[in-house]
Image (tube, rainbow, N blue to C red; front, side):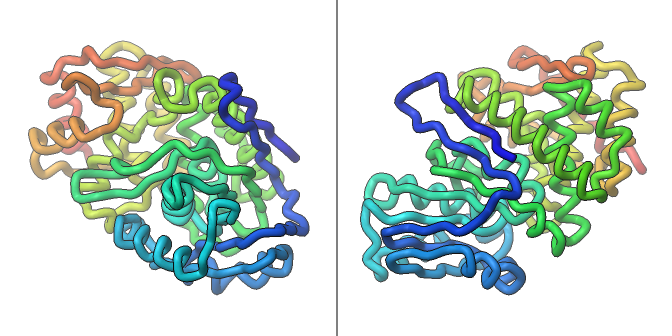
Length: 351
């Protein structure tokens, strides 16, 4: 199964997302695979049996969102220089979203840019992070505030890699699937309410439809000047939550699920969603044990965290607000008092 990403800008190279089509890969150049200890222990030998290269190196970085930082980037770069990779070399990201984001960012800056490929091993990275060329790292101010748009040469999604995925990691990926359905495809959302993503056939269909949605949006708006921002539904809230909790309490998809609930509450107040629609989304998230509640310690401080969001411009906070199910609005005119009231309401809710 294949999904092609064809950019309207001819200056950007098109590429293909291959789903369950990873066969032998042969490269007449130096290749470095970036991975982490967990993925390496589970899947690296299987992957190495499918790849040949002029020279092949393995770079292992620490596992976890808290390591998606400049120190890890420096470590990868040091390895590339020590192994004397050059502009014709290739990087391969073999892991989840953290590995993919860092590897892509390193590829964008090493000798002013080299090729890289994505081989995502988590559901979240398969349906979202590996597609679209967003790369980057976190710092003390927030998530993904340092980075670049750098498209991969190809993406290979293999469902077999998901067989060892912990339940929380699986659910985190489901959150990103739900995100795309709510904002772009009502029929997909209705299908998800009836599907069981623990079944292989349903999961493959969900991955395909999510990748097709992401590919269509990215092709129209590579650098997030318009419609691509909608893919951040729930993320404006989630990034503040992740930063407040030092990336230790929640997986990214879990924070996104909480952020979607906050965005839905805002949509309800604005008259853009009905109570029944909000409950339908929450019911779907709950089916996969995703959290939707977060106690905010300081609401004003939480609100100030929005100003570090990459979508904020001219001191106006841009919110992605679902309109019914299958639609959206991009808003930068929402009154602070209303947002604070929504945050206060969400903070006091209990499961």
